[in-house]
Image (spheres, rainbow, N blue to C red):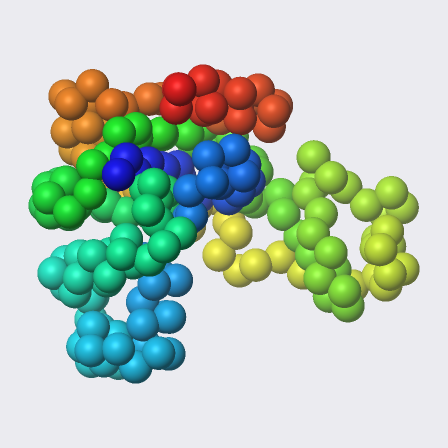
Length: 210
């Protein structure tokens, strides 16, 4: 079973590329957040244990996450592997993961920080229909009026400001740098330039996976 790990900072377009990787490879996307929520909702033994930590506002320990992944990769749709999204985040997690499934490719979508700030801080949504716009890449056709529903009230997320975004990016880089080096030493780490047209990024990812 060969699995893929997908890295990318917030705002790098990882969600779009994850969808395309799934469509191309047939591998299911595995997000630890989704798995935790599903296990808690299903009331599994691991889910009940995870809920104890979540209710206390604590991080769910690695061994609980690994137990969830062990369960998940037994599912029929995971027989050829899975695509991990947002996991592993640390070298101990990567080491534990390597003991339960073979990771054949690690894809890192990289975009310069200043471009991420531009992408995220330019976003705004219609207060009525939630249509998403962007100052630079997808502005409304008529200033102050939603193209979709004609309303005139827009909102921006409070945390979509440069300081908050740079802080999130700093945390992301601190966390993933050691991990990137660890996977690089194994010869399975592929850096993809994410500051280009979506189709070009997809083509490079799929070429790296061949």
